[in-house]
Image (cartoon, rainbow, N blue to C red):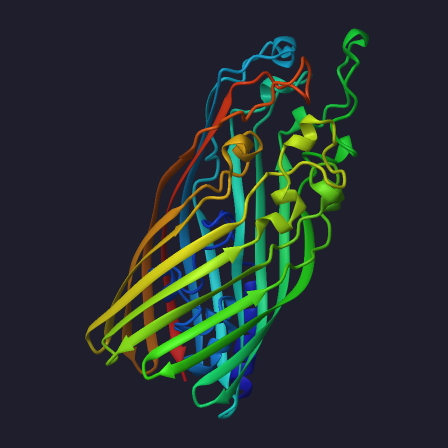
Length: 448
């Protein structure tokens, strides 16, 4: 037992070095654990490994005693276009905002995940998982907002958001066919922004045009402040039942996690640097036939509007509300509902083949694409496939491939054009954003 607990502690330390990258349902991962990712991300009613606690901690009851360690190679491709733009700001800067922009300064990301579960007795099971909850990354070598910068030479622009969860968990078997579970979700996140001097403008420099005050409540805390870090603690509650042989139902709920503010970016995010983890919940069903075929379906709801910096739109900025203020502007994301479907087939005993699909209306409205050049989380479809191979001796290997076809959001009234000067007017025109993704992952499980 002591060796097992020491290994779990080592995995917890390793989890601290996990580097999440841009995620796929907005900025949440499409699934947790390699087997789940191979089946479209389903997990509420189909526990498959110790990372099930990220979806439904009640699933620990069924996964048994095991370690899981895996890694994803994640390959996003993000870009944007600005057309039809012309403003006093661009005339003064002598630059044009129109053009195509490539946000792929960093092309490849590697995302580890770790899990451990242990059944204490017939009633209680415990576990811990470390995983990337989500994130966003863009790096534009040609600055999309450089034309609005009135002084200095624009540098490359982008953002990087990374979220890591460490989730010690407990499940309780209420009866032979019912379980509940709870995870203590310790959340850690990092953020940096750079090249956004256009939004740190203290005012137009000439007296004749001194009609615009600072764009931010803290102009010195908008951009180029390095990494800001914050912690928060929340929880997830889960339920799992088998009302009929082979048929399971499950669901979980995680309320909003209140995070420490990103104080180095007090002047960028609404409510003086606030950036919480949005509430999310969902449920699913699964049916397994003779240990040969399994099918599952989930519905997940992510409440992005509960986080001011994410859910508030650009209009307050146009109306004169400064960046970083209470009720200030954000990315304008709407809530997201994701539908996931997965299936597995075991043609021979040691091998299971898996496939899946998920769909969710992407969260970025057409009139909010200007700020979302930095955060184009607009994927709405995922196609997945994978396999699980039992090697004997308690060892198991899982692999998967995910393809998310390009989705493009065409701006509609996306660049403000109300008056002569920013922030009321940035010269009109439209900003379009695009994103496509691929991922390959593998994991090793050890049952004991």
